[in-house]
Image (cartoon, rainbow, N blue to C red; front, top):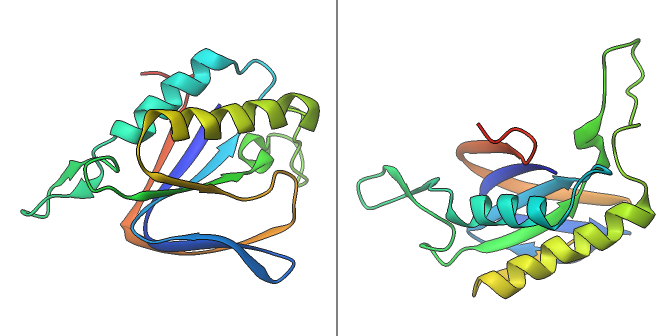
Length: 150
């Protein structure tokens, strides 16, 4: 499971030219899922993103988590996070899970977050053509991969 977290002052997802969900201060989370992902991956990346200290404290030091600031979360499925560009110029998405595997894991991930924090957790629609708007604060962008826990 691969996440790209962006610390934002605001973010929104539009589907068919209509805002589907929006957040203020918090994290825009892009999530890619591969076939070998499971509940352990969900728990590990979920805990990591909730507790990662990437928000500024009163001294402007990144020392606070999204939990500490009572931020919001916007979760967006993005299979292209598993794009392979090794050969040629057309990316291969063979490592990205097909919807029958990815959708249940995506929904479990969202539910895990909702059940393990008191934050507002919003999401896009899996497989939809979405337009994401955001103001990246910092900018701060972090990649978390459950297969690389170093």
